[in-house]
Structure formats: C-alpha cells, structure tokens
Image (cartoon, rainbow, N blue to C red):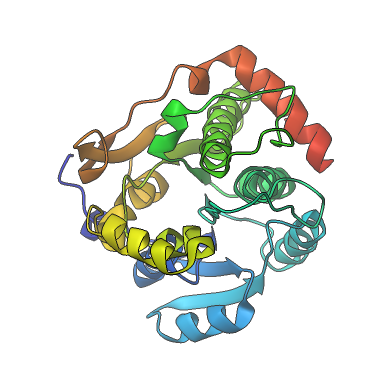
Length: 301
C-alpha cells in the first residue's frame, strides 16, 4: 500500500470526526477530505472567524467550534459542549501545533507554549473525550508526530524547558512527548480492552503556514530562511496523507505509525514510519503519562 492516496478513503457517512487546527495546512486538508467522503467534521480552531471562512469552501457537512489548546479552560469548555451535541465521536485527529523558534513563551496556564499546545492540550482533550470515543463503534485517535522526535530527549527535571531554553529543541521535545503519549495511549487502551484505536502519523517535510511563522521573529532574514526552507518540502496535500491513512484506512492497528517513505521519511508515498527508541520505552511512557496527568489535571486510563 505504498501508493496510498486520499482516493482510498472509505465512505465516512454517519461518522463524526474532530480535527484540531483545521482552518489551515494539514488540518484543513484532513478536514476537507473527511467531509468530502461524508463525515460530519468538527473544525476545532482557535480563530472561529477563520474557521467559518474555510468551512464555507469545504464541500461537505462541517461545523466550527472554538478551541485554544494553549488554555486548559478552553479545552474543558470545548469538550463539555461537544459531547452534549455529539455523545459518540468516531475520530479525533490531534493535528494542531505550533513551531516557535523565538524567545520562550508561555501558555495561559504558565507552561512553555509549544509543549502546552502540542502536548498537554491534546492530552487533556483526548482524556475528556474518551467516553464519547468509546461510545462509537470503532473510534480512532490520531496523534501528529514529527521526524524531529528522533533527535529529541525528555528532561523530566525540566520538562517545560525553564532552564537554558532552546526553541528548536523545545519543539523536538514536544513532538517526542506527543509520540511517547500516543504509544502509551495505545498500550493503555489495549490493557483496558477498549474499542478505541490509537495511532500516530507524521508529515515529513511539508509546506504549511507553520514554516514562515516559525521564523517571523527574525524579520527579513527569517522570511528568507522560510522561503528557502519551503523549496525542500512537499505539498500539504501529500503531507496530510499519513494522518488520513492513519485515520481512515481499513486494517489499521493500534500503535502503528505512518509517514513518508523516501529521503529519510521527509517525502514520498505513505508507509509505516520508524520510532525513536525513547518513543516506545514503556518506562518513559509511564513517567510522562503521570506528568501529563499532573500538569493538566485530567486523569484517564
């Protein structure tokens, strides 16, 4: 199945899909393809005006709801409202993310912003939606990793990078943590006998709006770096295929990891991807899970 494309997405009628960060980039492509195949897609976005604009251009059944993953209060409010209207959720695509290569910034809850958004917000959201996911017939949770996770390491004595902050390292750490928690979620769902499937994907090197934003703190030189970087990336339509396969392909197993297959997994057809050693270490997973529960106040499984 190395030639997997969006045309292979099965019929999604009758399914409710939640896509975070769905107003641009990978999330918009993912939401568009799911809606095109018949799913009712919830665009979970921080900027609802932008979400409404893109929703009008999607051919399918969509709704827009406000979600700021950098605020645990927003995550709780979103989840509480969502399950009232959708007591059974078939698919959660934890797509949203930030790349910030400037000075250290913090979330509404005081956490390093990349870790708060990419990791803790999604961890809390998944936990708050587990009952609704379990109520569906064959629900899936898809976590968005990155090839940067392979060069990252978690420092449990300074998980939120309060000392000697390095933005690129903090981003890689957030993506390693996302991957670790995705693997650990699969372990725990299996142990609990849950019908929910947890899988992971990464887009390789893909052209999204995150690239220019990551360098905006550098002014004119940052814009030049961003333009040069875009030359080495694949289209967002190709970059979204790994998470679309993880979300929809028949026969996907819990704990699988999908990404591009060529040039050190930076681009190319979708295939199974390679985890770092830390990502699949049960001891790391157990320790990070406990830290995430403590930081978010959301306990599950």
